[in-house]
Every structure is written in C-alpha cells, then in structure tokens.
Length: 136
Length: 136
View (tube, each protein chain N blue to C red):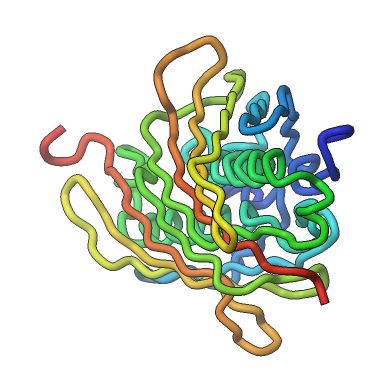
C-alpha cells in the first residue's frame, strides 16, 4: 500500500488511506471521526470532495506515470452531488475512475459509499487540465 | 465560530478562520501550509471546496438564523466548482460567500476564493442546499 502522506499531504492530513491504485482506477477510504463534522454533527462536505478530488488525481497519475511529474495535471472543474449524510463511525470508501485522457484535458468520475451497506453518499464528475499539454 | 453560531470541527481541523459574519455575507480565511498540498506541491482542491462549503453553509445560516437552522438544518446537495488558478504554501486564501436565493425547501449560494489582497479569482463555487425540515 502506498504511503498517502508522501503521496498527497492534505488527503493524508484529514485521514485518508490509499487502498488500491491501478490503471485508471483508485480506491481510498477514511474512517469518519468527530473532527470530520460540520456544525450539524454530520460529515462535512469538504471531507468527501477532498477524497473524490484525490482519487481522480491519483487515477490520472496511475495512467500518466512519469509524465505527471514533468507536466502536472490540475483540477479545473468539479461537480458533486451529496446524496446521503454520513456520521462519525462510518467508513467512507471513494472510487475514482478515469473516463478519458486527452492531450490537454482529462475527465473522470468518483463515487463515495459507506462501507457497511454500500449506500451511495456522494458522486462527482471532475475535469483536469494537463500542464504543457497540446494547445497550451 | 463563536457568537456566529456553532463551531465547525472540520474547519478547525484544516485551520480555517471566520473573519466576518453578517446577514447575507460570510468571509473565511486560511493560511496555506505544506500539509494543505497535493502530490504536485500546490494547494489541494479539497482545501478550497471545504472552505467554500463551510462559507456557503454559514451564509445561509446567517440569513435563516441559528435557531431556525438548528431546528431544521440545511445540507449541501450540489456543488459546482471551477478552479481557475493555483495557490502555494505561504499564500493566504480568502473565501467570500453570498446567498443567491433562500426558498422554503431549497437555497442557493455562491462562493469566491482569492489570494489575500488580489483581485484574481482562484476558484468559484455554486452550491445548492436542501432545507431538511424539522428534526424528528
């Protein structure tokens, strides 16, 4: 398993663990604690948007390899739907899948589920720009 | 948040501060540090989505009133964010949130993120909330 602290400092800081990373697919997880809540005591939306952004960034890196270091990709759009709340004690699993890698943009989607019953918590679509890509 | 309402554990965790809170306008700030970065060494998108989500949730609370909000919480159901420029450790991020419309069952708000003292947008988000209804 890859060290998430070395890979993505902010993702690791909030408690995310990398479970799987292969060709265009990444799975991350996080055990929700009281520190992940909003003033209503439920999971803060920022927890799952951070995980979904991280999952897709990594899924893209898994395909781009060394090129991702030379010409980094950056999220330019994220559209997320929050379908169900989550609470401290819940384990959140996020899967990111690359939909298309072009010369200067890439597209992906992410789903967040509760581990215990696979209930869909959130879903997002993300668009990335690739630095130094064609047309730049 | 003190007199403005309830504390947000996740905002505390990531190091965000409420700078201004009045009816229909909320401003938050965060000093970017190395633990807020992604694998490319720049600000993780999740930092901005977390701050924007917090700020728009707060600005809707500022209009609805804390007592009303506690009786019938609002929750983010959609987020559309555009990331227009990067930011690095040492930068100070300022997020401003405004209410677009507050209805009976849904509310709409937007947030803008900039570096302190600069006009250039680094991110913009549009959020839709559902007003959950009286707690059981």
